[in-house]
Length: 558
Ligand code: ATP
Ligand code: MG
Image (cartoon, rainbow, N blue to C red; front, side, top):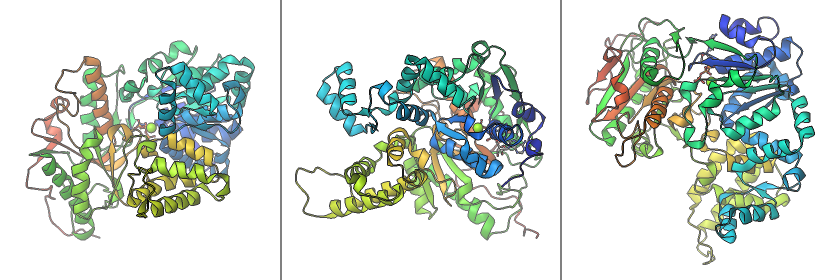
């Protein structure tokens, strides 16, 4: 546990402290990546609870993914110990579910309602023909809700019953939202319902990291915060604690053409005069690019632990200059689309490098997951025990059934036992989080993405889309496929509208700024136009056949 009581805010810089210790009322923290927004948020909550006597159960902190919620919860526990358990940390989906569970009747549901999974939705849609109103009726008749309507339905409930809305406002007078730039219209409206007129809403975010407009997120809500909430305070942070100076310099140049932040400032707090430049690799093919990643990972990890290197000099391989060691868990490979992951996954696995890959797809669409969920529901209350055990048992049953040669011919199962076990493995961390609460688990399954099931502590290289990497940081980052057509992503060569290019550029910005110490960008043949605006002096070109080598091969001094 970190220090509590006085000194809690000593671990923040002056501006962060201003934001963390501000009086109540609407407050917006506008700041770039790595400036400690999330850190400021957790310290704010800890400070309120530990020093100002706010009750933890009056605090509601909202995030977008379960992974982010989990991390926030952990950081809070680090600051507050057991007291942190009283704070409600929820995704928007989970918040919607909580409200509906407490008020099912107001939404036309009864107590034991569930979130429909994809096969159930498909079946009901087929039954309803094309008629969406009819479809909703069927859903309700089965006591089901869709994941995508959790927030909207909860909103309708609160709007329909003002007294109820008031009771929620009284329950959580302290409201916090991370990544506010990505709220969509329903989420925004729900936040407004939950915050009183004077809006004790504490929102943090970065408009330049708004990357979900394709899902209906509107950076507008961020930009007009000060108009929506009268007397809103705005705090800006500008010191980046995450990344080495060359990474920050490149990121700032990359976003400059379409930045949404007036006077964007991002200054390195980590003064590392010898920080390595960004590695840049032009590959001949996807396989070559994948080889480059595998070779470099091998050199970074094996190179430091098995060979002696200069630890941290420019061009040296050391990413973690403090300890001089890089582990697989320190490394992430980021890409624009899931389709790019295959060759890298192959190359890393062939090189014997442990990998964990999760896509931003819905967990429920992963092979085997729907089957496990169905099995869990079928087993019903008869199968006692915590969710993790039940998931394992369901996997066992399925794997045996799918292995058996005497399958019912009507049963057109295409899932192999191996896929079932892979699904069980992916689901286990989530199941463990849910304890005995099966409905919560099933909802998380329907609502969550695979990223939510990433294990941040796994000793493996992490493969992620840039979308999925938002808010995360890694000592070493490879950003692959930085080429026109991929980043920015185009479809069939058609030119992109300006707004789409701007969003792609923000994605590029998010990708670059995940890196703490080392950043490698690679592309096949033609580099992305986004690279063109970055000063070439910030890059070191890495030749096709030459993995980055330390300039001086001298024994490390102990
Ligand atoms: P993003 O926009 O990517 O979500 P962020 O602004 O939320 O970034 P954090 O993740 O909170 O940034 O912080 C980035 C890193 O910098 C973290 O490792 C955090 O612990 C560290 N950090 C932030 N502020 C300080 C500080 N005052 N002193 C030391 N380290 C800090
Ligand atoms: Mg953050």
